[in-house]
Amino acid sequence: MAMPPPALEFSNVTLIFDDVVALDNVSFRVYPGDSLVVLGVAGSGKSVMLKLSLGLLRPDAGEIYLFGEQITSIGEQELFAIRRRVGMVFQESALFDSLTVAENVGYPLVNQPGGPPPDEVLEECVREALRFVELEPAIDKLPSELSGGMRRRVAIARAIVSQPPLVLYDSPTAGLDPITAHTIMTLVLKERDTANVASVLVTHRLQNGHLLANFRYDPASAEVMPAGQNGGRSQTRFLVLQKGRVVFDGDQQELSRQQGSYVGKFAMKPR
Amino acid sequence: MLPSEFKAEVARGGNGLYSLEFELKRMVLAVQEFMVMSGRAIANIFRRPHYWSDVLAQMDIIGVGSFPIVALTGFFSGAVLALQMYDTLATFGATAKTGTMVSASLVLQMGPVLTALMVAGRNSAGIASELGSMTVTEQIDAMRALGTDPLKKLVTPRLLATVVVLPLLTIIADLVGVCGGFVISYFVMRLSATQYWTSTYRDLALEDVAHGLTKPFAFAFAVALVGCYYGLRTRGGTQGVGRSTTQAVVAASILILALNLLITKIFVRT
Image (cartoon, rainbow over all chains, first blue to last red; front, side, top):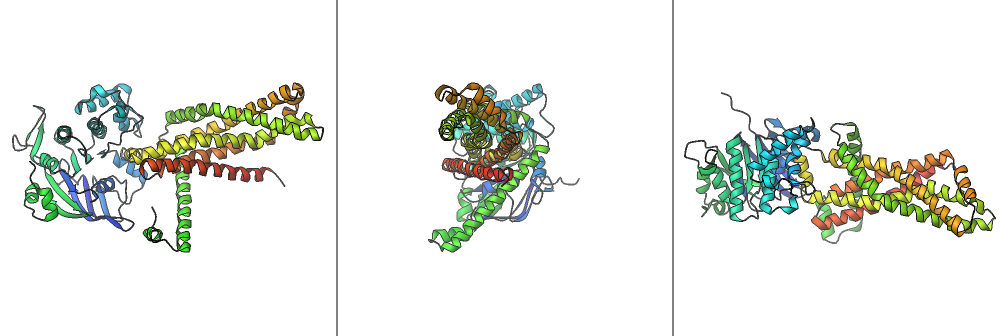
């Protein structure tokens, strides 16, 4: 059987801001249902990589493909249609602060080219997405009335409400306490394993990558459990960036064997 | 974003001529970006999807919200014009022409210009700060990521709303201004009411009204697009939002005055 095209592919992508190289000859592929964990210190080019993935920035060299379609040389209007098939969770949530939680989550459905769905369908979709992140009671609140962790959960609900086959997470646990961070990561696992979406997770915490690589969400028990039990393990790869360059690309076993000073720091086992 | 050589040049104190060259290039680039954004926003009027509810909401914010300041501006302008004109016209024994002078000055110049300046101060600033805040908190990026064109969703509705409401606000300012002139003429200068209103109505030609109503259409583009442009190019957090807001009001006001001169020159045959 022919392999499906990668959900996301970078081919020798380079991006330069003035005289600063943000990304240098970066290549990788993420297949449907798989996960890519991007590690790196602040300023290593992780968030820029996600913005390039959506065509929010254009590379100076190289090519980017979304679902097999080259997005580096197409116009902004054509890009809008492709972006609707990708969910994005921004680092600071980027919720529309003048809209309620329901309006934020329903935004991708209301603002589609074919017009909004009927009110009852829209409400059910929004409630379902909010139930997924366990925030249905907050449906009428404004983002300013929510805690940081709740805002991230609303951002996840907004990213998945249109059921995209690829979701990009930009440091979804940054600045959160360990318990809330674990809740967020459970949602990332839940989305990956229940809807079989491809996930790209930008983070500087190896624990998050460890969870994605070794655990799965079990819908029957609604719990996270080791991936070895009852099968259902998706492929998780790790990419380590340093000053815009890929200094490691491999799976968790390969990462744990790394002794280099930079990659080795990320490879230290989580306690 | 400034070219790296320019930044390096500025950092070391700079050769004046070299810096001037880059400063001029930056200004040309800003004009180019503004023209591209304006062209797209205007073209979006004819492209689907249309966000009519956003247009109505903006008409309410810009139009209804600006009504009190525009009405007050019109009233005081008309009143002060009557006061000033009466004094001057008395020298020639032509105080009966006070209404004519007030209405002509208001309809042709002061009404459109002062209304646009007041709306620019209120709404160009409001638009720049709103869009600026959205830019620095990644809401504009989120909008693009969710498959919505920010120019279609944010800029075009503000442009359409301003183009519709600014001429209406100008008509209101003109009417209230003429009433302000009447209050001074009748109650302070003791002119006859019939004399004031007859001269106001009779001497105002249709061409003057067309002249006076062409201006707010042109000014509407300056008010809306300058605010949107500075908002969308905001960089540097809350300080950047403040800077964009100030720049938007200054640029919109200058553009309104320059457009006023241009349109007046077209209408006034010398």
